[in-house]
Length: 165
Image 1 (cartoon, rainbow, N blue to C red):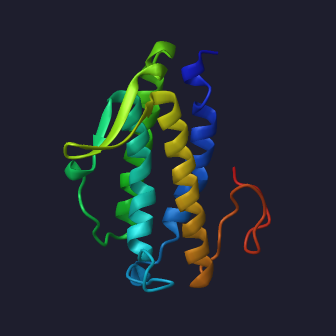
Image 2 (image 1 turned 90 degrees about the horizontal axis):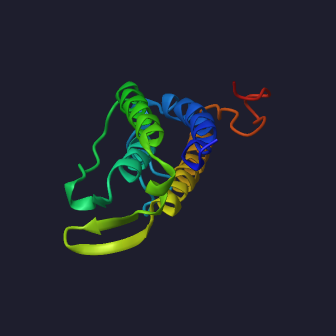
């Protein structure tokens, strides 16, 4: 198996469970925050829905400029799920288009002309997936705090005893 193909099964598994978390965001609670310094539930869910697009970007481009990114808005969970699904499809297509030598290309995160982070593409791809899983974990805590059933991700939860399929 080429190195570029090895993360795809893991990516697809993580996206299946991530989608289940996004689906559960109650639209009437989008502005809710667990603390005044925290992200709102709607913005956190939107970030999680965007992040597979970051993976598509890292696999197909050499930089992501945060100045070109849209700002946060409050969207319905159905809209966020559709956005997420598109980003997942784009990411899988971009990952499938990579060859092993592409993994060593330098990738940069910028804000306009300011470089915030540079790393080889292979490091960035793994980092973006880990970053997405981190924010998905935050999302499950938000869901628990507003008494929305938390889906099974890596194993049973108090709300779901079965493993995700």
